[in-house]
Image (spheres, one colour):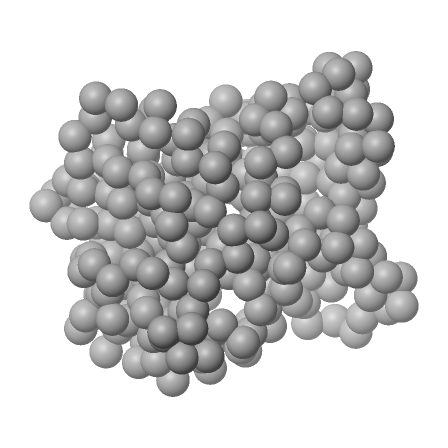
Length: 278
């Protein structure tokens, strides 16, 4: 796919994330972080574990004052906010979700050095010192991987660091039940999505000129995250149906409850890849 033909898939992303902020608020933590949390002691609250995950991610990038950070797939803005408050002077967050863009802009109001854009990486051409991308790679297929890593390399320049956090396929043999569940996930929950193979991430990044420095699996942390999300949504059943409908509630409960066992079994995984442009 050549750069001039790159377009962001706004429709697929908005089909999921623009459902209702009020709905997502019923099971996410107060930071509205919709990705795997990190439980260093196992005793953290959901909010504390999400902040711990953000700090784990940003800490790997060795961020310094004066640097410019690009957040690809910034969600409701929690990682970008934390980065600006604690680590760097300038953060640009990209999202394809109208609801997330509006929410993040409310957070950013009056804060210098924090900018959110309703834009995909496909059309972003500005330089940056570091890149963080949490939960974005799953939303487009392997036909875009080459272009994605090339665009990131172009923005970073030599020796720039990128932290890529993504759900991946696992290392164990896939059952028919698992394949049927994957079909449900990628049609009913994340239309247009694909789970990358870890080897695809490594090979495509290497071809673009990245060196893999570190890879860390957080799959058991994601299993716990999903358990907590499911518990929150179940406790808020009546309100969830009120702000959406019963079909949506049932679908999301199926999604949250069914994901955790596959992370525990290793049939799916979640990795943080730290890489450097060379």
